[in-house]
Length: 137
Image (cartoon, rainbow, N blue to C red; front, side, top):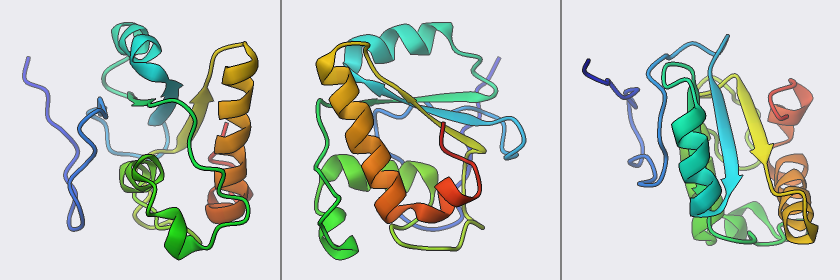
C-alpha cells in the first residue's frame, strides 16, 4: 500500500523527522510532539498512520516565554514545530493548520515535565490561537 504525504501548497518543506499521517482533515488528525528519538520510534510503531503524525524533539526546546516572535524562529526545534503544524508564531490565522490536535507526549520524569512545560509556554505565548480554539492537548 502506497503512503501519500499531505501536500503543502506553499512554504518550506516539512521537517525530516516528522512521520506524517495520510489523512488531511482536522476532524481526526493528531500530531504527537514526543521527547527524543527513542520515544519517537516507539510512538511511530504504535500509531495509526492514517490519522496520527509523530515528531520527535531533541531534548529541551528554547524557553520562549520572554522571546519575541522574530527570535523564536531562530531555534531550529521551534521552527520545525511551526512548519509541521502549518502556523506562524503569533498568527491568528488557522486556515493552514495541518492537524486538529497537537499532543505533547513527554516522559514522566523531571526532564519530561520540564520539556512539557517549555512546550506549553511556547503554545500559550506564541501560538495562542491554537490554545484558544482547543487544539493543544
